[in-house]
Amino acid sequence: MSNEKTIKSALISVFSKDGLAPIVKKLNEQGVTIYSTGGTEKFINDLGIDVVPVEEVTSYPSILGGRVKTLHPKVFGGILNRQNHEGDVAELAAYNIPQIDVVIVDLYPFEKTVASGASEQDIIEKIDIGGISLIRAAAKNFADVICVSSVDDYAEFLELISENNGSISEESRKRFAGKAFNVSSHYDTAIFNYFNKNHDEAVLKISEPKGKVLRYGENPHQRGFFFGDFDELFTKLHGKELSYNNLLDVDAAVNLMLEFKNDAPTFAILKHNNACGLAQRDTLHQAYLDALAGDPVSAFGGVLISNKEIDLATAEEIHKLFCEVVIAPSFASDALELLKGKKNRILLEIHDVEMPKTNVRSCLNGVLVQDRNNITDTIEGLKNVTDTNPTDNELEDLIFASKICKHTKSNTIVLAKNKQLCASGTGQTSRVDALEQAIHKAGTFKFDLNGAVMASDAFFPFPDCVEIAKNAGITAVIQPGGSIKDQLSIDYCNANNVAMVMTGTRHFKH
Image (tube, rainbow, N blue to C red; front, side):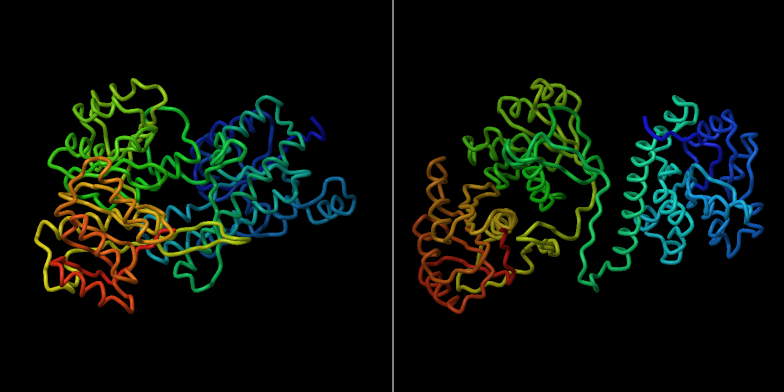
C-alpha cells in the first residue's frame, strides 16, 4: 500500500449517529484529536470522550440557527492544506490552523424530507451547506485527507482504521473520495430536481446511487446494468438473479397490472413485454386458468403477475408451467413453499409503491423523456358514435381490452370476450396485419369470436379493419378516433349493426 498516512485528527459533523460510536471510540483509543459541532459534539461528550468544539478553533459560535458552524478558514484550511507544500505548512502555523486528517460527514436527509411531504420551509432547511462543503474539500484533498461521506461507509472506515492502526493508504483515500463525490453529486441532483419538478428548465439530471451488474444485457455479448432501488418495489422471495430481459418483462407486467390493481381477481402472463394471456374472474385460480388458455404455447418461459395473493390452488396450477418470474402482492405460505420447488423460478412480492411520473430512454446520441401515460379509458369517458350502442357486458369488455391495448406494442389490436384476452396482434407495421394476426391466433386456440370486442391503440384510417372484425364475429369496437376518414368506419358499423365507441385518447406504445 502506497503513501500511507496515519490519522492524528478528525472532524466529525453528522446527521445520523447510527454506527458512529465504535468509530469515535476507536479514534480515541488511537489518540486522535476529535473536533466536532452541535449535536455530534454532544453525542461524543456523552460517550465520555474528549472532543474539541469547532467554536474553539474558529473563535466564532454556531450562528444563524445552526446554518453556519464549520464555514471558516480555520476549518477549511485544516482540510485543504497540502502537507508536502512548504507554503501551506507555514500558513497553517502562522494562522494557528489545526491539521485535519479525516472528515466524517452525514448530510441532512433532503430526499427523505421531500418524500415525507414536509412543508417547503422544512425542505429548504434540509439543504446541507456546511456538510456538502466539507465533503467536497476533503475529497478534493484525498492526497492528505480521507473523507467519510455517508453513514453507509461507517463500517468500512472502522474496519480500515482498526486493521491498520489508523494508517490509511492513498488508494483507500482516493476510493473514499470517489464515494464522496458520488454523494455530493447525487445530493445536488436531488435538490435541482426538486426545484425543477415542473421541468421549467429543459434539463435532464438523473442520479441512481444504487446499481448492480447483470449477467449480461439483451444478449450474452452485451454488458448489462440495473440502476435503481429494486428492493423498494419488490421483496425477492426465491430464485435466480434477474436478467436484463427479465427486468424488462417485469416492468411491462407491473405497469399492465396497475390497470387492474383494485379490480376483481386478475391474472396476466407476459412474453417479450406483451400480454399473451389475461383474464379477470371471481377467483384467482380461474383467472389463471383462463389467462393461460389465451396462449399456453407462449406462456412457456413467461412472466406471471397477479393483482391478488396467490393461494395454494393457483400455485398448484402455476407449478405445472415452466415460467421465469411470478409476481404478486403476497403469497400464501403453502403456495410459496410449493412454488419454491423450482430452484430457478423467481418469486417477487410487489410493494405498494408509486411508479415514476416520467419515462426515460436512450435515443440516438441523447435521451428521450416523456410523461407517464397515466390516462386509463373509462366507461364514463366513451363516446358512442354508432346507431348501435354497446351492451353493458360489451362496455366492460371494451374497457378491459383497452387496458391491455395500452400496454401492448404498436401497432396493436386486442380481441377480448367475457374479460378474457382472446388474442392480440402486437408490434405490426399495419393495423390490418395486427388484426389478422389476432384473429388467426384466436382461431389457433379455439376461441369463438362471436360477440367478442376489439380494441385499437390508434384510429382506423380506412374501414377495412372494422369490416374484417365484423366478418370474424366482433360486435363492438373501441378506438381513439381522430382520422379524417372516421365516418367511413362509422358508416360501415352502422350498416352492419356493430357498436363503436371512441375515447379521444391514443395509446401508442413504441
